Image (cartoon, rainbow, N blue to C red; front, side, top):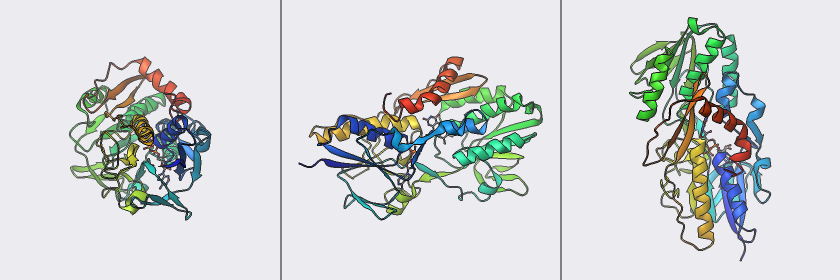
Length: 378
Ligand SMILES: Cc1cc2nc3c(=O)[nH]c(=O)nc-3n(C[C@H](O)[C@H](O)[C@H](O)COP(=O)(O)OP(=O)(O)OC[C@H]3O[C@@H](n4cnc5c(N)ncnc54)[C@H](O)[C@@H]3O)c2cc1C
């Protein structure tokens, strides 16, 4: 019997890990593992936050995708243009047609910069390498005034990142002697500063202690770059520097193929990670519509479940691995302290007292990512 064809689309955290796990566990006569990704480089996105505040170098944040893959993984640098789930094939931008027996969609999310009028001209962000670099330059030139940090739409990946940025910015401004002449305003679209209550309580305490003003129920409708005003549903806010997390949506190919909802999030079974109603197709990471944090750790835990399920099915066994909603991430609070958020569907996070240990662990993780995560060592 010829080996079955496993096609993984997307070479981010989830796609790379699932490809490596499958290549390691399956023999060549059992399966050919192919990874299709539109980016020849793999990016460590959490590092963009640190680039913005001059704390990490860009060169530490990317590696050639191929260098992260097991030798047995066949890597194609091309973009999926359209998914044809009925005929089990994927059309690529260069015109190739890739048939598959098993498909894993790990195409992540994309920024929807046009959804908010004035966003591109009037605000900065750190949700791409270019965005982080531009923000770094803007901060270096900043001499004081009001900085507004806000959210352009939900869901967005790494929900703690805007809080972390705010705390790190507070430290950055103090270091540069500019905190006294800077007002920091953190806005959030719902009635607390973070979606999960236990985290919101802790973060709010730290925001208050640092003298950071919080504006809640602040939905951003538009920005006037000339007058430097953010229009919110609950009122307007003037700014000297705006850092707004852009709205997100699913990948273009998902939207084009009509396999997601209106915003391109793919309906996914929260336990099996199977695309709802479609046998042999799994979805992981930011691409799913599962209402949990879109995070690298989510993609990481999900990749392991999907790899287990695919191996079991290829070997004619009943797949038993289930995703329990596990997410784990650090929350940087600045001043050399951080805490850890560890939770799943059943257990909300109970963040431990912020300590230097968690801060150092996050710093170490930022360096060790390349050796631990895409390779599947952890
Ligand atoms: C500033 C910032 C800080 C963050 N901090 C953390 C953190 O501390 N902890 C944490 O867990 N997470 C963090 N995240 C979130 C984390 O980076 C993402 O949630 C994670 O990368 C999602 O993994 P993924 O595999 O689903 O998608 P991605 O890693 O985004 O990968 C998607 C891949 O699919 C490719 N692709 C897209 N469309 C196509 C197509 N049509 N054809 C082929 N390839 C395609 C892309 O090029 C990309 O390689 C942070 C993110 C940001 C921006």
